[in-house]
Image (cartoon, rainbow, N blue to C red; front, side, top):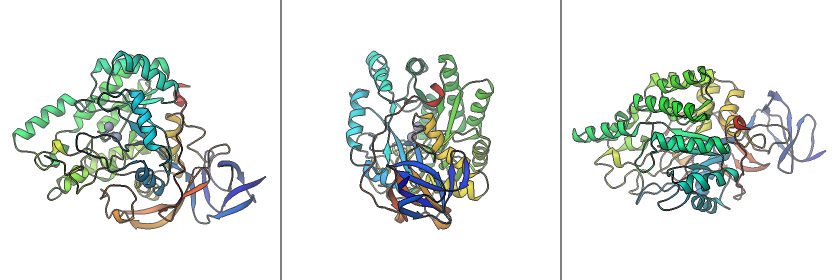
Length: 465
Ligand code: DUC
Ligand code: ZN
Ligand code: ZN
């Protein structure tokens, strides 16, 4: 067979292990893994590692974030940054605006993404209403149409669902075959701590962290797992930040429950002290759950190394810092309550895990591929088309230089935010070329293609098939 493109000379992290071989690509699909392959075009990847293109299954793009607040990324900048960070697919959330049905929201997000993406895109839903139309009509129809995962919140006024409502949502997931993702923090406990902090003048960004302590997350994690057990559904706990929540997940698995878990770069590299930086700088690090301590980094690493965590996602939720529509929102300097919640990270997720995990000897290349691509595809109904370098899969590949060492700099990044929480953080190992269905989307750190990203229809999660 003559291929359209062959990648030669790379160590290939394939679905069946890491080997030295060539990757033959035809019509955007991996056609051959072998040697001495014929092709019209060749990429010499000597000295590089070929990994599956990253799938970031937890990003927020163009999501409404309150009156007067604007997310820093639209689909053009968000997926451009993703591609430059070695990703080929992202899964943003679809949040209905006030008065909008879930189906209308999906149509609106699809329209915002259409023709603007440098990665492929598929959407999770956020379920914030449990009226009969949402649960009886919209959600079943959307699951049928391939929106096979949705997030529920246990925190945030206007988003948080009661235990009863979560059970109702879970029973729709059970009946129609979808994955429930949970943001596990106890809203009442946070409100109590937040009101008390404000009464005593503890209003600086740092107190975002002190009012969302570990027990707030541990308790909600335990409760979410119990609700999933009662409803009889698998569950994914997203953005786990600490050891006690991790233990809840381990205990649930020991009881035979199917619980998946996600963590993020902020929980192995940032601490609550970052929120205590001079002046208003701490606002740059306000996200939920908050970054914890160095001891918690060790707990999260143990979970990554021992397989408790299935997913390593960015939770990219970007706001600009010098902007009254961003972190410097009206009232934000008076109380942390008013600081928009979230940090940018879609472009830096993979280099941080490669450097801190693979280069420092904590995880293998195979485990890196599972945590950053394969498991995301399996859990969210994209496998085997996405998530692994194997014959028949889309030719979504990131070529990595494992020796390239440089600090993360805002000036090198491509997101819409005006800062990175990892400014100056030195990383060894960077993606130097990203290919989406065989087309180069990033080369040497710069975006190079037109917006060729497509919307992906998903199957049911592997575990439900
Ligand atoms: N949860 C997220 O998943 N992202 C940003 C904010 C939040 O609370
Ligand atoms: Zn969340
Ligand atoms: Zn998120």
